[in-house]
Image: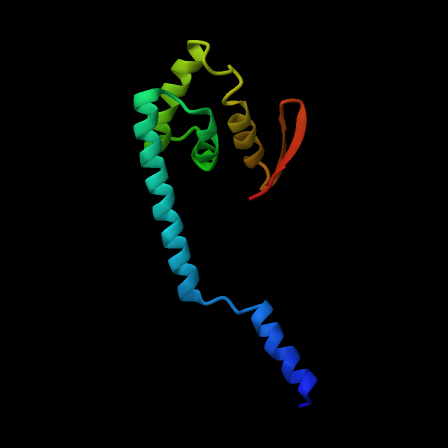
Length: 123
């Protein structure tokens, strides 16, 4: 092997490292714990201060369970529904969740209309 080939392999290994399975497992476990902590804190904040508009993204990550009986949605859905009823939140709040659920019933990818703009949501 010439020096260029050795250097290329060395830099290729640095730029495109092979994924360590233990690292991937650890990373996934950490992500699950962080999400759980974020949801618990959001529950506390929501129960004390009502729904926080910027917290929508955390709820969006639960979209696969929308419409199901889950611990997370059982806490937030009644609060959000009450705020919709009281006029604090838009009546269209759940529309994107409904669209996602409908779209996922027949495909894995989809386009959704948000505020008259077309956005592509990919998992």
